[in-house]
Length: 380
Image (cartoon, rainbow, N blue to C red; front, side, top):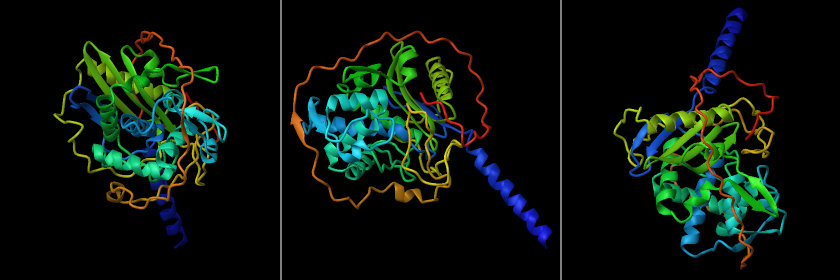
């Protein structure tokens, strides 16, 4: 009897191990035509995923809406709350009570993925980050991002903050088409703040021919994520990669996808990003092995060296609940004071895009070995 129990225990343990390891090698990707939203290629594009700092594209979208409505202005200043100042890296290092212009906060999100600046914008527009997250989710659903749900403005780990590659491609497309006056900010290669030049994280924007920018993201749960837009020979494409196992891999996946799309090597499935089926979202994979079983508020999206720790075992939940707008809104605290100032215009240095070196397209091994939990990942 004891022998039988041992055999069953071993079989169950082996089965669970195989299921866990099967999550590490997968990724999701999609590329669309930015002129009409037609899907050129997709893989796992409707599978649920953790957005990480790609969340900040929605934070910016809601900010652009407020700018369009004259609720705020680019040179208005917002004050940093205690909550915003305590955000983990990546961050600008804003101190409690310190002011930052809306324009600088926008550039900080795009170039440095600054969590403190994201919360400053969220509290300035929503009173609290919780209220702003409700607005983000409502906006996402109004755009047709029905499998997306936001719990914060930063993308820091939260098991209920989920999206899909398809939803993010739709968001990027709507950002381009609805806010052409603000979209050029995504091309910023660096950012001057307090006399310091802070270089942008996004290597694709800096090196790929015709790259127009967008956003990077990383947590242990999501893996290495990327939204990119590029134009060549009169064509503009938008690509999304979720779940790269390393930072170089996400860039290579995007380069390969963009190159093949511009070269017309994909066979179109006749889908459009606005109408493609998105019912089988599943459960988000915990992509990398750098987390722990104990929840922690410490996390890094991009530029820090420490790994992100969030629960390894994500509780299963029905995504039909995720698709519903949040009805319970936390009572708003006093909105951060906005004063009109006109500081010196911060110049973003426009660099010529370096020609991309044609790298050999290596076949991505989907059976990626689980990294040691104690090993620090390289962030870029």
